[in-house]
Amino acid sequence: MQDPRDPLSTTPSVDDIPSVERSWERRTLESLAFATLQEQKTARRWKVGLRLAWLLLMAVIAWQAFSYNSPSTSPSMPHTAMVSIKGEIGSEGDGSAENVMAAMRSALEDSGSQALVLLINSPGGSPVQAGLINDEIRRLKALHKKPIYVVVEESCASAAYYIAAAADKIFVDKASIVGSIGVLMDGFGFTGLMDKLGVERRLMTAGVNKGFLDPFSPQTEAQRKHAQAMLDQIHSQFIQVVRQGRGDRLKETPEMFSGLFWSGQQAVDMGLADAMGSLDSVARDVVKAPDVIDYSRHENVAERLAKRFGAAVGEGAVHALRMGSALR
Image 1: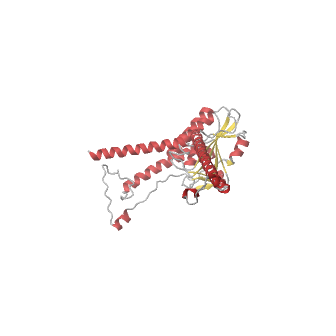
Image 2 (image 1 turned 180 degrees about the horizontal axis):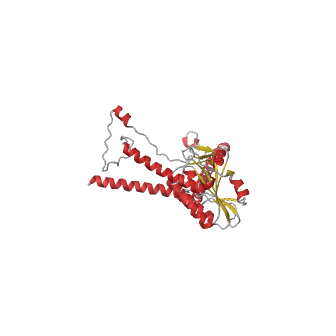
Image 3 (image 1 turned 45 degrees about the horizontal axis):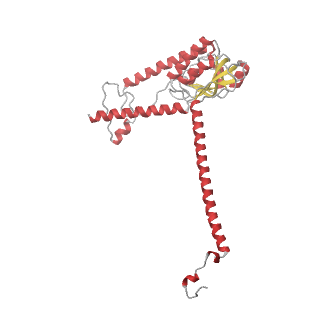
């Protein structure tokens, strides 16, 4: 029998705790446990998802880096080979002579290719790159005995027409821009502005003409004549290439080699182009092989990274050499 005056006698036992209170504690513990398990499951799912995403990203990068455009038709079947030349023609990019010539060689070496079509949409660019491609077109025509045609989209001007002149036939749209047979060398001169601002150009050279075309130095008459002679010589080479490529089809006028450009319809009338046509119509009606396979070369991710890495290494080496020479 408990003594009511004993304080320990008032402490309730486990059996004295109401069942409702015990069930609430149990539910709370179960909720905490389930929440912890759910959080762990969510964390695992995120971890697995992120790993799969990274794996997929690496697979896409690897595929982009080491894959080229796969043709939609078997190369062993008769087809029309196509190489596109788009954008500025320069030493780098898709319009470089290295990429275009490699693509042309691959296209014509394929036994199934019946002809090669150069799909051109370019405002021009480097005469050196254009000259290399022009020479390669002539060599490949003699080597493989297959016709090479040019199809012009929006424009085929300046260095782009330098390339097109070597083709067997040139097809244009009636609204295409064709021509611009000329050469330019542009720049700016800031000597007058520098005099007004009181800025002095301190340029030291070993050689009278070493500062030739420096925008902050005045241009002498001898330098201007020298530059004009260079442009005239390149222009003469351009004219000779056009005459050689177009032959008797060319209807020369005084304005033809002045640097002007014309619409596709005018180009056909002047003999700068042969007829109207598109890639599909040329493949279907001229080559008689409607299936077109694109052999164009494009820089992949690996090549771009390699070039950037090489440029960064070269810049670092130059910087190190400069620092080393400065410390001596």
